[in-house]
Image (cartoon, rainbow, N blue to C red; front, side, top):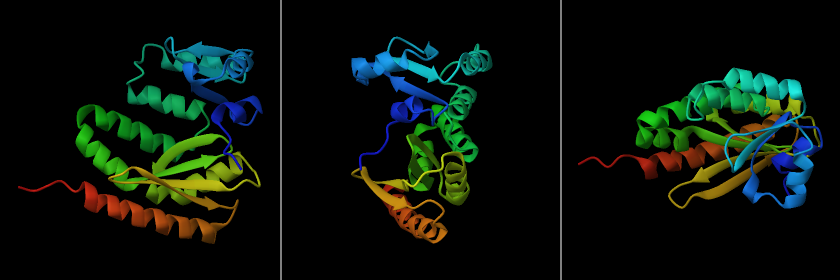
Length: 194
């Protein structure tokens, strides 16, 4: 089964908002999305909202903030319907990579776990995997498995581990597999000492 895209989840009323690079969308999809309240960040990117109140709140909360500001990223993540712990992890990384990109990326790719569930795609810390999974299962109930993802360095291979809703032993198994990938990444990405 093909994974649900964020815009599909949004159009079905599952996600509260979606962020899209509009040049990547088919014209008919963009036409459907533009029936909803939206806010263009620039000529290529837009955020679509389920209602005007959400759009107004987002614009008010982000007024005066650069899109590069970690607080903006946190507000965006919350608006898009991501788990709070995942939002905290990503916004912290985002701010860190602005000041020390190499060290932040090393940390990110040695602690990050990806989530894909009902069109919601986000990242969180490996230690928060249970809390983020529980949050996603509660917020977006479905018979479709939650997909846990990890990127294996140095080739950027995407590894996926599906977990059925509420399957905590399957979640622990996926966590162990992801931890093995992250441990591998730590070896591959370790700074060279001279």
